[in-house]
Image (tube, helix red, strand yellow):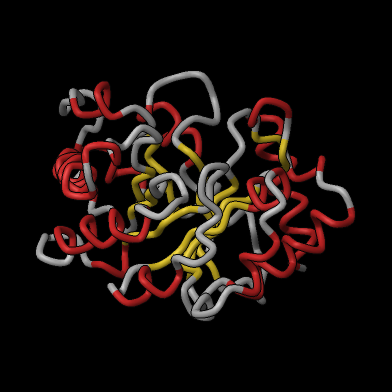
Length: 248
């Protein structure tokens, strides 16, 4: 547990996105070292991230004492099939392999009749790869709440990342009562919903938002990860303080 969040009852790793201050991944990691346990490497765009080199993700990041996980692209090519989406995830894992990523957050395909099949195609590639299935976490998004998909996700040994802001913004409360979700929640993304999909600080949560945050914290597996997914310095640290106060 990081020095910032000195909470005896908090059984989770505390993570920050790799963009909290303007600057490179290296600059953000140096700034956040000692304040959190882990960094979410924001690989939001497939094309640009597939072009990353050693200069973007240097070995010296290991010297910060931080651990890392990958947030995979928002534009995974699901329209080309689950196999193609898996190939992008595997290629990006290789880009960051020297940082020993502990988890892989993946946006699912859009909800619809094809979604389960696409996830199955994706999973069949992943389970035969160097990525352990239990480290792949599907995130609820605007286009797919994951309702109706938890059984296939758990069937392949994969897990779920619950995003608080998405639950609130898109009225996805039903996901909290989904069959097969118990024991699946390995990561939380904590933020408050803002206009046009913005991620606001936790101080912007209303009473309902705080209540659901409490529910999510109880659903998180022991030693799971809580990512305060806020992309601005002042709001990020206000959020850490609120989370600390809430958990104390």
